[in-house]
Image 1 (spheres, rainbow, N blue to C red):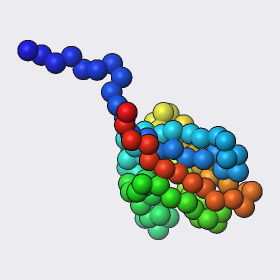
Image 2: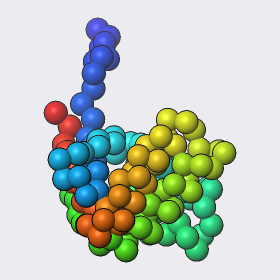
Image 3: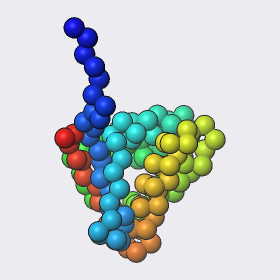
Image 4: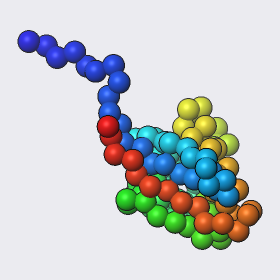
Length: 119
């Protein structure tokens, strides 16, 4: 008997705040974060990619970044989104994450994320 794959498979997500807008949230599949980490390792210099790769490969159960940390992540995520070797779909996630981190940093607010388990 062959198994038919489910049309909508359950996927775990990282949920990030929109920054200072505490009502807004973005959801990014954990698989996309792992993909972005791979792009970061190939597209960013060794000296600058460390904190970003660590966050993307090990988001934990969630957390909070200070505005200064969020500003650093925003810069790296936006740089990654603009790189010519990053696929369009991955670049869109990097851009959205970078924009959210930048908004938090600009408003002096923490940037928060949590893991939403697969349903």
